[in-house]
Image (cartoon, rainbow, N blue to C red):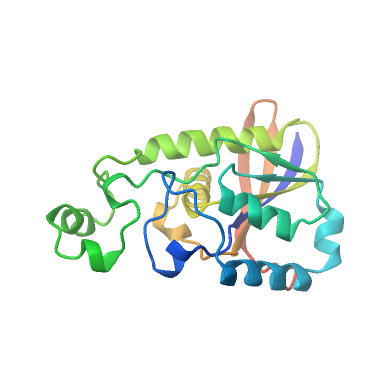
Length: 205
């Protein structure tokens, strides 16, 4: 048995995020100027102790995640995990509330509490399965104690935490540059969540 501490960090802001659009796997947009500035400010406020205990850093393959990882973890080797791509929002992709408001398909999804599939989108169970596969890749040797940081997307974070804790998917909505920490126990080919919580990178707690 080994213990793994995993930090899940959502990427910085993009123009689409500021406009509150559904920015998913079909939209590989970069960080906006504000997003870059926010990430640089956060990097300068993260305690050295956090970086000192970090054994490995990974990022999803999309530009906004990679840019954020390279800002926050400047000078670190950053592995890319293809499975940690944002979900495909299908019919909602690139649109925001003002553009979808009054659309019967959107209203049906809202009325269902977001539980029904979005037309043309990735199924949530598929997002969960591939995000979990990505986590397994990040964990690597399951017999080794490690501290791992992963920069990815809100969808990946919601998928992983809901799956590992059994809680509702929407309980884990995460703003740009917010972070969750998980303490995991790993047994050969199995992992179990021991504790999880929001983590404030600026304070190191």
